[in-house]
Image (cartoon, rainbow, N blue to C red; front, side, top):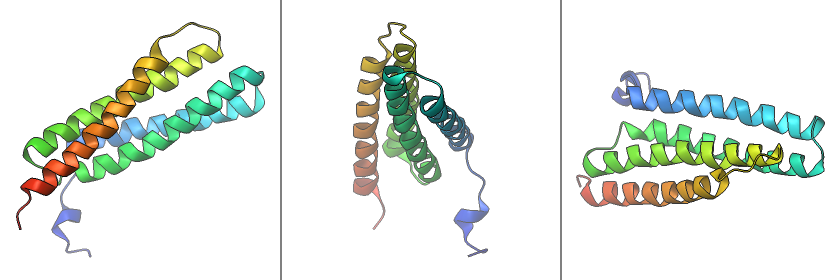
Length: 137
C-alpha cells in the first residue's frame, strides 16, 4: 500500500481547495446544528436544522468528489470541476438562504441554491458516465 503510486502523488490545488471548503462547511454545519438545538425558536431552529443537514451531507460529498477529481481526464474532469463549483454554489445559496430565512431575512438563496445542488448531482453523474465511456479498457 505504501508503494501505491496514487497515494504518493500530491492532490491538485482544486482538490485541496475543495477539501478545505468542505471542511469549513462541515464545521459551520455542526455549529449551525448546535445553534438550532440550543438557541433558536422553533421555526428558526427547524430551518437551521435543515440547512445544517444539507450542508453536512454535501460537505461529505465534496470530499469524495475531491478525492476522485485527480483521477479524471478530459471532459470528465471539466464536468467534475463544474460539479464542484455547483455544489459549492448550492451549499452557499441553499443553506445560507435558509439561515437568512431563519433570521427572518427574505432571500432567494434557497430556490437558486437548490437548483444548483440538483444541477451539481446531474453534472456529477454526467462526469462519471463520460469517464466510464472514455476509459481505457
